[in-house]
Amino acid sequence: MNNICVFVYGTLRKNESNHYLMKGATLIAGQAWANGRLFDTGHGYPALKESMSDKVYGELYIVSEEQLLRLDELEGYRPNSRNNLYIRKKQVVFYEKGKIEAYLYFIAEHHGDMLKNHIESGDWKVYRLEKSD
Image (cartoon, rainbow, N blue to C red):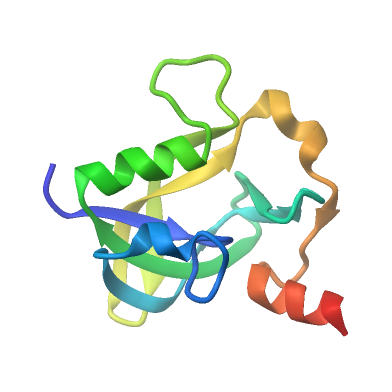
């Protein structure tokens, strides 16, 4: 697996609490977007639900296999498990140089009750700034 692309939209973004897990990753785009509906979970991190009519904003990285495994651990994802918190799926992500397929973490359907407030802007950082005012 070379050039594993990951789109991050919450606490893994630059200057956020879990960004340290991205150390050594290659930033492709500091501003990117994908289709999805973003929610505040009320637990200090957002969750993404699949949607073709909404956009979520974040950053695009190339990670190593080892980093991907650490991200899977953070996101409560194990391949072929029915008890995942998040599901990792590939999806097209758009950025200033075009588009690329990348992994995104979507909330598992059985955890839909965690989706408290829809984040209208689709941007976790903007939402947190607005909320702190």
